[in-house]
Figure (cartoon, rainbow, N blue to C red):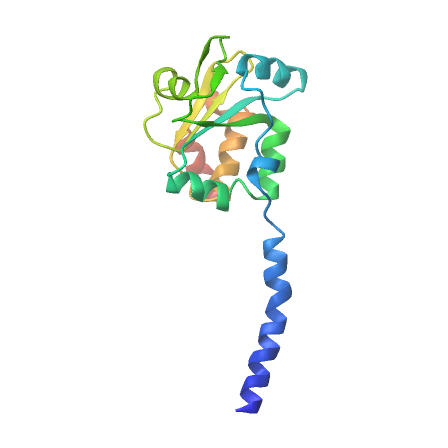
Length: 178
């Protein structure tokens, strides 16, 4: 019994550094993925142009959405995702039930929920809406991705302008063949 207990203790001691290193590989998406904003998306378009970004990503979410939580806890919290997306886009969350007043991409004042429902027809969450530097929506993805890899492909798909030539479904199919 004593030998068996010693083996288990040794195994647990060996696993502690591994679990600690895994925990260190994630960061709060609200601090490291999303950018701070005064909710003036027309001004954010100007900022994106000045910073040499490819566009703006708006993450439409709601509190009770399990798929939104999945994305924040498994994808948007990864340093490689955060660094890639922050390099290419300005990223902002929008609460589809929110009453906060925002300025949309055309300079109109409205509540977050009206921006989501009426203007962007968001009915299910999450929705990832990419806008070019002129404020035109160029790609929309509804639902969670299968994981980090697919979300990174979506970023490449938009940042590299591939959306102009093929659907995201076709792009994913080609990436899986590589």
